[in-house]
Image (cartoon, one colour):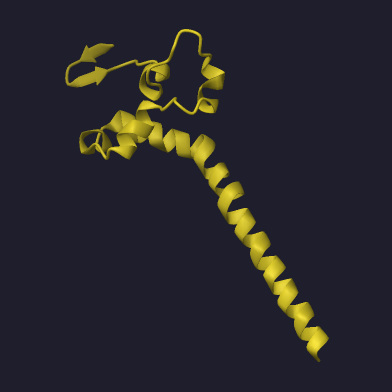
Length: 101
């Protein structure tokens, strides 16, 4: 890192921030498949560590993760199934109503 007046620049590898206790044989691409693996971010969120909630680096990390992964996962796992369920329910009610007439 470097400092220029009041400006401090830090460069931190995301593996150090977003991983916790990686065993030497674990590959970074397979970490999320391991049930015992938890990222540092998951631990901070689970324990509601307030000091990190106001840290700019963690806010940026959360924002970037939401933009790159979370938003699309949320849409595909929550919004799309809800819309499909709603469409199926509406079609069922409409068809059932037509049968009763």
